[in-house]
Length: 635
Image: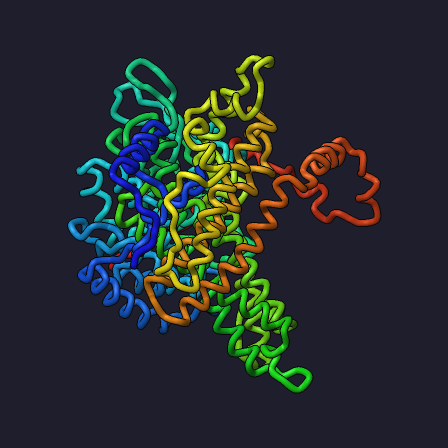
């Protein structure tokens, strides 16, 4: 007997209308969670690929696995570069066109298949996953699929599918997550046939070896030009382009990431993607899809961690028994296994939802990226602790001593960037808060305008927002919800009931925060960050339960049950920290740090970086004669 919540046709129409009024053309499971509504019907039954799509994916992944088994990731780690023959081999398999439609020479596979491919190649060396992801998730193919003209697609997508490496250039030396400060300019030529590109881009992943790039630049407003940030497709062999440096990083040895200068580079008007002034919209949409690649590689890292933890903990003996039988280590293994299952559940569900296209997955993609990047770092750290000194030792050193070359320390280094890539954790908190809590923030703004004499907070909030007038009684009492036992989920049913209750508690907590801080709620980043993190855990729990129900095996239910128990502890701690924290004290102390009150605390050490250069280089002045060799790979 199915006992999931039923949504009547009338309720569905009302919810759809509410979403449209809020600027959401499609429903969103995560959005509903933050509004206090657990819409299980949006994710259950678990989406799945058609037999034809699944068969094509399996055939490709089988061939990819066979090829990856011939690649030595240690070469990439030692030489800090991906050998040309590895790139050529991936191109011949079609890896640079996994999601590009078949009519343009690509494989035409799904997001799910693409994610599994990234998981596989990333397990050989994460740099390979980054190479393919920077090319296909955010490079030229994705913006063209989203906003390109038929002519642009016909011209560029076959090259991309054939192995012409691409990149996405947005970040600048003094512009990170604040694109409003974008300084790279694109000035229309007098004849109106082209744009003259000037500026510098930093951290251009794949940019050092790219053949084509998408560049975000600002067009000045003028007669016949609406102006604004605009997306351009640029040929990297154009005169005036200089790759000034190949950067080196803590991890991801082999990543082709550099500094790229554009000096009076002429770009034909036909290479504008989506029209003038639509660059930021295209960039955000591109990053939205691009974020789905990170959870796949995080889940792959978790799988490897679980394998190493299992094999090592069964073999390593201390005090007369394998270390896996000691409770301290068993807890770590349990966390690694349960969290890995959940990471895969989150990335699989998000990818399937992307393929289906019936849901708006802006929040889901951001949550998947945020949650998986944070949890995978914890998983890797726990494995390092289990391995002890061998976890801290490099794979090369282990091999030189005759031991198994398990590169745990490399994994810790390589995973760390995922908390920064495609929007840092802090930026993800702000982005998700804006998208998910906008109804609450809108009410906060309206509340701030209510006359002080009528400011009874609960009544004023309800008066200020139709959302609260409609839903607040339900959020407080739970009355009006369709009663459900989630019986078909068996042992996982209590977790779904917890999800149902917690979604309402999450919305109530946001309302209370709005009532307390009113319009200043948007400045309470600690509070909003915890709200976002609670939603992330609830999303992960839902994805895990739905996946376990689909798989319908005892082992899947066991993993999901333990994960949900662990996640619930984190959720309760986050709920408590909404109101019991040191946010205000931290803000005051940080201000004192900046005004020099505690400079005495810095005494007693030396700073080797002192005098080595400014914090931010003036890349905009001067030119470099250096230019890297651009590599084009063909099948």
